[in-house]
Amino acid sequence: RQQQRDGCCICFRVERVAFVPSIVRWCIDRSYVACLQFSSPISPFHNHQSQQQHRMKRPAPATTTASDADAESATWQNSYVSDSSDDGSASQQQHRQCFSNCSIPSCASVLANRRRKRPTPSEGERALIEDLNALSIKEREEVYEDIHGVRGSGVVQETPEMVSRAVIDVWECIGRIKRHRKEAYELALMMCPAFVQDRAFVLMFLRADFFDVAKAATRLVNHFEVKLELFGVDRLVKQITWEDLDEGTRAVVLTKAMQHFPGLVDTVGRTVIIGYTAREDYSNQQNHHRATWYFLMGLMRDNEDAQRRGVVAIGYMVGMSERKLNESMSTNIAKEPECLPMRYATLHICYNSPKLRPMLSFMQLVASTQTRLRLRTHFGTDVECLYELMAFGVRQDVFPVDSEGNLSTDRYAEALDTRRRREAEMEEARRQSSKIEYPRSIDVLFGRGKTFKDFHGNVLMHACIDRYKDNYRRASSREEKTTIVEVVVMTIKDSGGRFLRRCKDPMDGWEVVPFVAAREKISYTIRARLK
Image 1: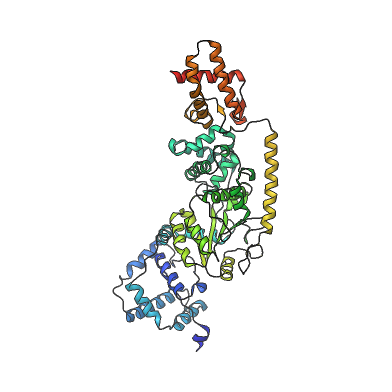
Image 2: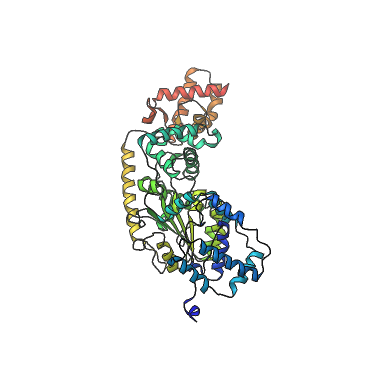
């Protein structure tokens, strides 16, 4: 009667991480998932050597029946108690009481059934299991500390000498990357070296990968590849501001589905961001990716603490409609994480639809190892998910979602207005400056090499010359040829193009060349194309 009224405690002694998905699935099938708790580390052994010795002493299990399962359960109980420190300790008595009270008739049959037909984990679970098995106990504890926000975890102690050496190593590592894999990076470097080689900019990528130079170099190259695809040549080497977004992307930002505002931090002060997917607009994938880029790059650029300690990201999918669910599953979810200078201290996914499980498994499969180890999913109602988030240090007094699933947008709207005013002032100052930081896609650039030749403005110049080169060939006098050259120059200028060359110091940007120099370049190019 007492068990019927109060229930009982079921203790699993887990010796292999591979058993964890089966235990979780067993609890989900019986609606015990809200009560499920794990003690870390999962393995009770202090080192791998003693673990291997213990496994060698235990014989391989044979075909298990229900009676065998009862016997093995008793053996596990005795071995668990024998591993305790003192015979008369309170913890040992508590464990004995838990096992003695656990008299559910179906326990033995469940164990026998699991031995006969063990469920097959998904591909995402397989990848997680492999990553966990590859970690030592110390590394696993570091992951747990990072997830729960233990102060000092996940932060690299930086010194000026270390940072300077790492920045130089990044350039050397990028130099070893094959040319066809870094075309967008080389284009950006040609357009504005001051932007690409900015120390603070490169440092963001180093912090995102714990100062792993090779990974930071790959992430930096991927950054410009994706940015070129999303925003084009004209915005490749500038900070993306509100004025750079089209109407469709602005509409996605104004849904306020992705939020961070001053004060939205966890119990140890780490930056928290939330993606409220029920409000997100997935109708246009490019607009969604551009809005995500604008939101995350603005956050990381202005928040050094988030660069050092990572961000706590929460994907809130509770209450998603069927249409939103289908649209989110068709969205390319692997586009941003590996090209932005940010890392997840923890990634929480809150959901209440079983249809999301295949997508979550896919996320585990395609995510990087660091992200996969820090991914936590929470299944249940709004109240259940909020309580589970509290266990990971997410403060409910500043969290914008209440217990009924309603999203508050007032604080983020104020933060967004402040950011837009600051960006408008920055754009106005740039327009009033006489300095040309980077060329536009319709400008003609003076320089040698494939990067200059393939620049969009120079390609347009060649197309314009091709329309007049036959007239130039038929011209009989020098004056006629000069007139044709001047027509080409004026055609390019009338379309908004400029003739630019680098300043003496490349970090100073570009300067407009005189009309005579522009005419000489067109004349030389025409003669070269007539050969």
